[in-house]
Amino acid sequence: MASKQHVDDQEYLVTIDQVDVELNKKRVLKSIDLQVRRGEFVSVLGVSGCGKTTLLNTIAGFYRPSAGRLNVLQENKPTIGYVFQKDALFPWFTAFQNIASGELIKTKQKSEREKIISELAVELGVQEALNKYPSELSGGMAQRVEIARCLANEPSIILFDEPFLGLDVQNRYHLHDMLYKLWYRHSLTIILVTHDVDEALLLSDRLVILTGQPATIEYVKEVEISRPRDHRIHSHPQYIELRQEVFEILETEFKERRLVE
Image (cartoon, rainbow, N blue to C red; front, side):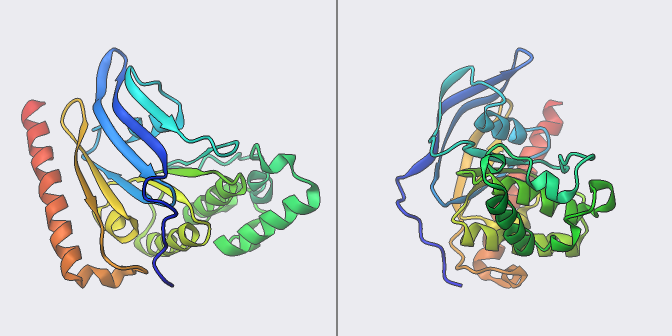
């Protein structure tokens, strides 16, 4: 599989310009500058509580900036998909009904809707689970159904908030591979929040690290390791160097926060 080519490096789907965000009268994010290109996979890292999810929620429109400008290119409705840490499936719906519950897919004819769901189910490996309820699904399978529901709405951008947190290593490896293939096949634009440096290096075009209190973006780095990648990249010299660089930044930030608190 060849490396995915971007349509235009200057074709930004997300533009964040000097954005501040306040929650409960406390400034959480300060002077955030970030542009995300069409078809790009960006991972946001930082120590716990630094504002990663707040940044994601601001892009999603859940929070309004207190200063600055945020623009998400409106290509279709809904523009943004969101996959949370824990699946947000409706417990009273089957997996099929959950995937079919999105705003856009509900407007399609029954035959087209069933075709879309069937194809996504095969692609994500949940075809045997379509008649099961969320309580009958493993954590990894529930997240696959959640991702299928998101894709069924054809979003321009998908936001992932630590979607593989709490899954065992083998499940995470399988889902990393699945997510990469989905990103490639569907030309997705993805912003992923994660604590996992290895996950970010495996999947991303670019790393963004939040530091400080309130948080700002002090570090942005291209991941120039050729694709496709798998877990053998752990021995790649550039991977080792970049991983060490990221860990040093996070370790310094962690120590500084401990001193402040």
